[in-house]
Image (cartoon, rainbow, N blue to C red):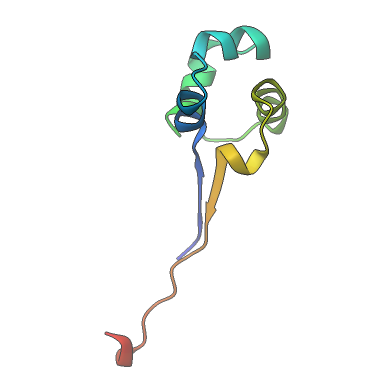
Amino acid sequence: MSGKIVITLDEYRKSKGVSKYKICRACNLQQTQLNAYCNNKMSRIDLDVLTRICDFLECDLTDIVKYYPPEKEKSKDER
């Protein structure tokens, strides 16, 4: 089983009261591109895009990207 990366941009931007429109304008992104990040539906992550978003929101990458390591398989004793 492998780990998982989750983009939490939509939650973060809502907590800061920033609209998607403002992010698109400031970061030179298309609405569909930002929506893919907000909905965690992109197939590849563009580090330049994440850098521009972090710069605009004045946040760290760890504020909008979370890594969840793989769950270890339980041994027979733990079941």
